[in-house]
Image 1 (cartoon, protein in one colour):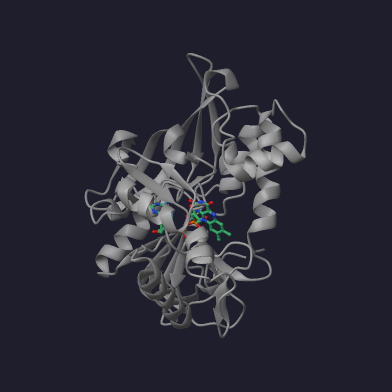
Image 2 (cartoon, helix red, strand yellow):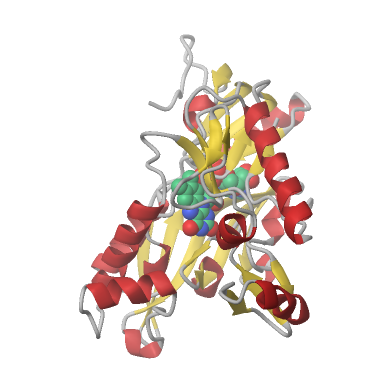
Length: 353
Ligand SMILES: Cc1cc2nc3c(=O)[nH]c(=O)nc-3n(C[C@H](O)[C@H](O)[C@H](O)COP(=O)(O)OP(=O)(O)OC[C@H]3O[C@@H](n4cnc5c(N)ncnc54)[C@H](O)[C@@H]3O)c2cc1C
């Protein structure tokens, strides 16, 4: 249950534990904490932070962060702005406008049920709608940026609500303006997604090997949108840890993007290394493969922290690990990868506090 009021009925709470509000299930307390259910509450919270000169952290479902055991010394604002609207658009499109506090996968399920095409490959990604543009979530060859039409924000610097179009969001692989120092002032309130009523406008993306194998196994040659979702849910459930059993924030590192020349060099020693062309002379390689086959790290663990047995890119807290232990483990992995392959890998998970 989300804490919303203290015994005096105050909406800004003190010393709230963040541990259970993250999927890693570690971390200390927020000095101040509140839940924002609408734009007015966001404004109030920001006034409080300004008056008290507090740093602010905007929290979704805590599935891409690692909170320090010391906690966060400022104000944590848990986004809980709800609501989903459907607006008919020209050209067989529908715009979905969803509040930042909506659950991501509930939104995907709803769009699939309504036969609206565009989000199905992003099924079962944990988290809130509001966090989706922050690292431009992606899976199975689709990034959320491909269907975002606008992002409504509250700008902490000017204390105004604004609409950013897709270009202004500066999306890239696991990147956006919201991760830059200027973009950290933007609190995402609502997002517009432009989806297609018919798959003919844009064919389903089924070329990822896991998806291809699943379709073959199920003997499906002309998948429906519901098939795609079912396949991705099954693949992810098998491959990824169960959040009810272990703590994790999913992929701890980003997949490296390397030059064509570097990719060719790796291929001499590791002919099976998979890669996807991304932009001019650049190839995205799969770090899970690198960790497993090039570094021999699949299943590697130290104490209560380890790499997940089915997906080595995922760092798992088997219970009772501290944030410090998880951090040291991740640093160790980065050092081993550097020593064995020369690759400098980058973190996807954000450290808080
Ligand atoms: C098992 C597992 C599997 C995963 N698989 C994938 C995957 O396939 N692809 C993928 O891309 N990610 C994946 N992730 C990562 C994660 O699900 C996404 O990054 C997700 O979007 C995080 O949502 P959240 O609400 O939990 O954000 P949080 O972890 O709460 O926050 C993440 C960042 O977003 C900011 N933020 C959150 N809400 C707002 C807002 N309203 N306004 C401004 N900033 C905000 C936070 O300040 C923080 O910087 C996975 C995670 C897990 C645990």
